[in-house]
Length: 179
Image (cartoon, rainbow, N blue to C red; front, side, top):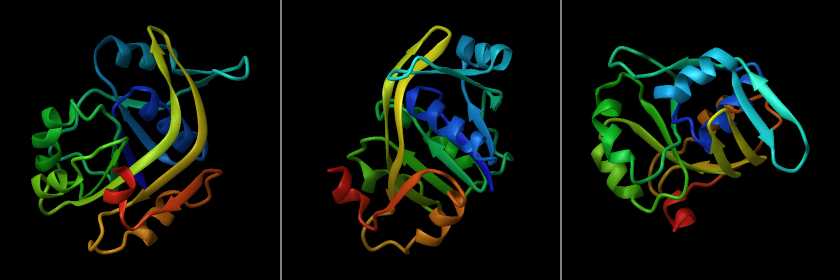
């Protein structure tokens, strides 16, 4: 599967690293000086609990073009930033989009991305970004699914995370879960 992680904060960086380490075809969308830093030095993540820093040479892009095609896009951005990328997501060919984070506007996002298979996930990682690295705790667990009444995405989710040492909990009613 070809995966794009759109957003290079704590959640996005941890997710991209986890996919990369498990041999998945993953690309991280980052911007500005942070994108250049990752391209030059690799994605550096310091574990908040253990005194270790991992360096991952994940592919990095700085934009999502309409003709770029992925099997799934994981959007890992603050909910206050999502409106700024909706046109980009609508214009892109990719059908499967997963918004990661605590988002209470689930129905609105599904409506605004008509024709897309919109899912939601809540990843158990937290931390902060420093100029040269992410410092975080990542429990390698995600709760993920679609809104109640939508066709099940359980098989697709299983395929995305297949073979990973990652705890995946399928939730068929992510709207209520996130509330």
